[in-house]
Image (cartoon, rainbow, N blue to C red; front, top):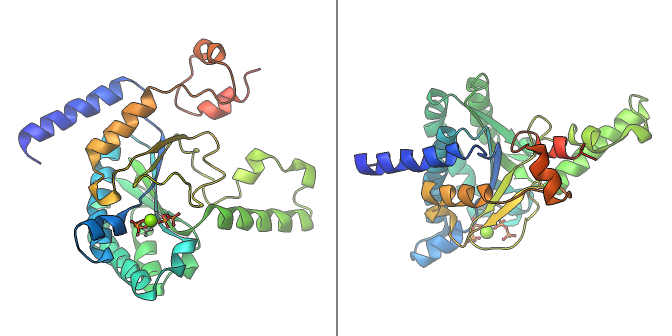
Length: 273
Ligand code: IPE
Ligand code: IPE
Ligand code: MG
């Protein structure tokens, strides 16, 4: 980045921070790599590679802004059904990226985590992934969560099985199951719910991403394809988010009176009578 661009970048970041309600958790459905490649007359894999550059830029900008958690949908349960060569290329790209970027993440005090059916990934991916997770586990600036072989329904079924077993063993009573208990059995148990969900490439759907957790997330869908999505697009999404009023089922007056924005807003508002 040129010096003038850097100064402009810092200015935009300062402006967003000043507003006070930077999303605590941003989740992104990174879509449109294939279409980007087709537009450029390139094979689909070129779109995935270019998409890694967007990941790098967005991760860096989120960390600078003070976003605490960034969850990226990188590979869905359903994506296994794509042609074999695309799946294997994606896995190779994942290995290459983990090899190349782990040190940089660590230097920037970013903690890597993963959600999804990790044991279904090739062993080599699992190895680099667990090494990166282990290496960065004490970092505290931002959590970067990769959703890999992940789907919301997979996670809900998984949680249900764990809960059912606890009930069978007498550790939990059916009547004790509530939102909170259920959430604690999902792979996102330790994360706040996403404040902002971004989807690139203009598709108006969720595609099985975090279906439980996004109950009250603000949605931002842009036509920009993921390989074209860079920090300036992220700033636009956050700006849009900051202008919204999150009501959590209440009326505007209750929200204004309570003066609570951002942190744990959902939990606090759900207690307001
Ligand atoms: C998103 O881009 C990346 C993954 C799902 C792995 P796509 O590969 O879905 O790109 P489009 O939707 O075909 O353009
Ligand atoms: C969602 O994109 C999954 C990821 C971004 C990893 P898809 O391209 O798989 O979603 P659909 O098929 O358009 O719904
Ligand atoms: Mg797609």
